[in-house]
Image 1 (cartoon, rainbow, N blue to C red):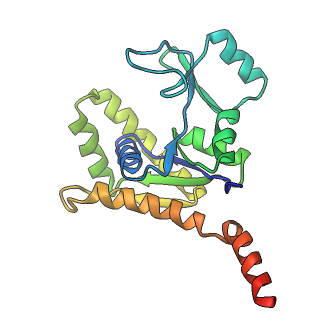
Image 2 (cartoon, rainbow, N blue to C red; image 1 turned 45 degrees about the vertical axis):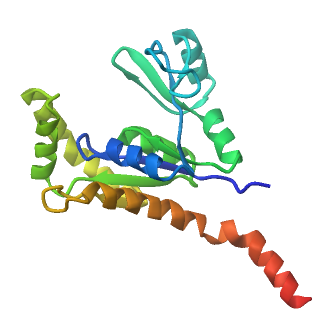
Length: 212
């Protein structure tokens, strides 16, 4: 019987680099999977239902909300997005460790519903570095940058409710910042796999053989 997988929720301020870290983690460690979210938006060219997203209608999404089917959900850019409990539980039952990359509020909702979930907060090394990252992206207006930076204090304050904090270092100071942060996230996953509960069957068998 396969060992049950674990769910790891990852979040942090915009510009902290969480998406890049998750992408590199999945590339380097195929034993970790990304949770597939549910959405009401139309599939984009090349997207596959059940692989990129679970695509559903507005009516179906609202029905799922009423059924309490989501760990968390949000309305973003005129579409709904959410994490289905059934999808996550099915993957965990197969022994797959899952990454769920969502915003801070979504992560807190998931952790509040399931005490076994591991929360990982990706943090920038400083306010100045975060602002530089936001500006380098070239996708944010001055007003958007001000708003995002204004929200960072509230987001960082929630880090005290997570289990682990990864500092994504300044690339100009540490060229391997992305690799280091990625490996630190994987170290958390590896450590959780070595906990007593995941070794209990082995210890029981070993103990029994030693008594024989």
